[in-house]
Length: 83
Image (cartoon, rainbow, N blue to C red):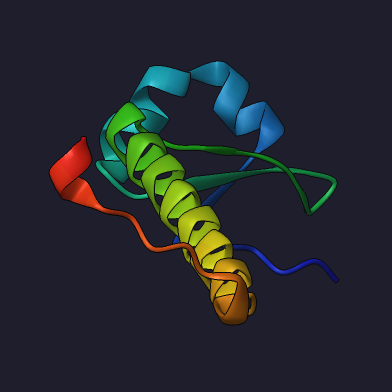
């Protein structure tokens, strides 16, 4: 059985009947659209998608900082007075 990462789920056939109504009913919450009781895709609002992308970018930056901290002995001093 697959994990469903949404508070709301709906069958593909129900979704096809009236996708706009599904969006209105869910509000800002994600909706799992199921095909044969397995998640086929998730419907999310643009606002939620933007928040997810921002979180992914933040995660990538944290990883970059951690990797650079591992090379602390190779640190370079920067003189900002000469910039």
